[in-house]
Amino acid sequence: NAGVTQTPKFQVLKTGQSMTLQCAQDMNHEYMSWYRQDPGMGLRLIHYSVGAGITDQGEVPNGYNVSRSTTEDFPLRLLSAAPSQTSVYFCASSYSRTRNSPLHFGNGTRLTVT
Amino acid sequence: AQKVTQAQTEISVVEKEDVTLDCVYETRDTTYYLFWYKQPPSGELVFLIRRNSFDEQNEISGRYSWNFQKSTSSFNFTITASQVVDSAVYFCALSEDRDDKIIFGKGTRLHILP
Image (cartoon, rainbow over all chains, first blue to last red; front, side, top):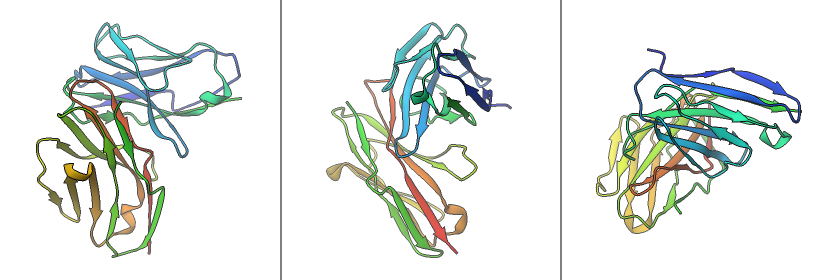
């Protein structure tokens, strides 16, 4: 049982480049979300989705796009990378949109933008 | 909007001491859910506990215990007889019943010294 899989594990980008962070879960979870973790800032919610075809903004959505065409996948797109987007990114999923469900996290993607 | 405050940025204690991690939350919703997660040095995020707003019963799991007090909007986490393996960053999180966002505090980094 793979759980939540994030790829790549590490990535270095130059300012202005674009890329997609991949996230897939095999638990048939409805809810998926993306967080970024920065020193002293904790985990901040970027975007989330309560089901296929539905996405919404979190606390820090600027500079990021998401889509949810399938239940399993929730990619995060950086259209034009900036040094301020250097961070560790975590994808998470939970069983249902009820707020009682704990999140299952991927192992993270460490992104550096130079 | 909901908010989680973990005022203790970093705590160091000697092994076998008891330690309490504080979590204070803000919400306008009457139904909400509180969580604690652990992030060991290896970096993964691990779910520890969930508590519903209508259940103020404290919980004990081995050396871990949680004290939920609605009167002070707090959900504190105590580790009894700490061990080196407890060294980690601990996050408190909140979700409201009327919202799909799960918001985290900034975390408390706990060092258990041998």
